[in-house]
Length: 232
Image (cartoon, rainbow, N blue to C red; front, side):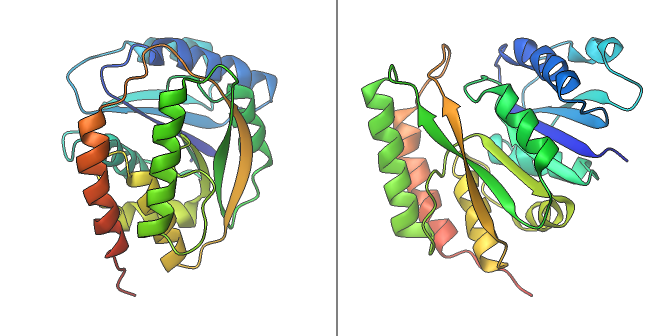
């Protein structure tokens, strides 16, 4: 059993090739030695990251796995949760928009019993249009789907313990980008404490916004999340 699982959902994104070695190097600096990295993708592309196992200590492993089931980032995250049995689970994106040092530091200090999520502190050079879309998503998520105020619903950085991860893998249903919002909604319904942590975030090359998906698909998912219930 590993102490920590890092879940990275990926879809046709070569940035993961640079991200994983950076994680390995940074985790070594922080003396994080018992972990697995799960690269979950729903495409047929192979990134060849299993070969990086030679750079790991004997207590760690990299696994590149295709999700044959539900598509989308939320589907990949849920699939990753079903594969992990670690004490701590961290979910991040591969674009390195969040500093890997922040990821390592919080994974090392996390004590369990709460859902930790990132609040993006934006680089001054952030594109205005992207920032406006992000603020609109944040407003709608809080207004439509959530009861308590979440300061950032789309930051690709979350840490949880085994009990919370098990709850999510059994209840998460949203396959698209609004899976983050449903994670917060599930935490609300299960009375799981939700704590924020500020992380520096910068715009990165290769990030693309699908406006049709944001306006139509994500908006519909927010109402589905609002109506979502959990049987106890």
